[in-house]
Length: 125
Image 1 (cartoon, rainbow, N blue to C red):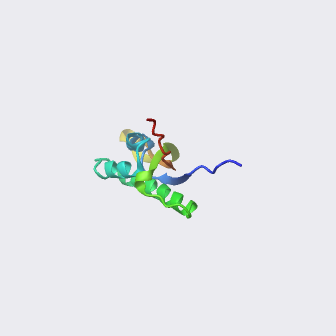
Image 2 (image 1 turned 180 degrees about the horizontal axis):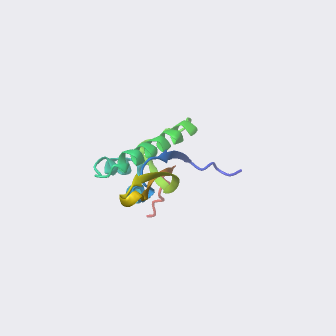
Image 3 (image 1 turned 45 degrees about the vertical axis):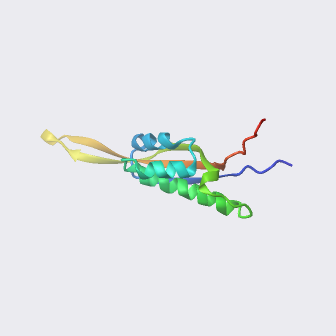
């Protein structure tokens, strides 16, 4: 019988921000501890940092809910996987000179975060 993997996932779908801008924020916290990632996002000057922090907190809460018999602190968890996919694009029209029309793409994205428990390190003497 295999031991269950201590990880949980959270997904934010149809976020009305361009995926290109959200990926900049997601790349800055990939692989970090949850507590370090949340603190870093708190001081980041990007609009998407609030949304990414919210998804990380949700994934950590999902892990605590999934494994209720164990107690987890944010220091014990890390961001195992984080990626941003492109969502639906709303197509709008901007009037342009001489009767023309220019298209405006209003992009959205999906943020997926997987958090896991840090493995205990072996001490060799």
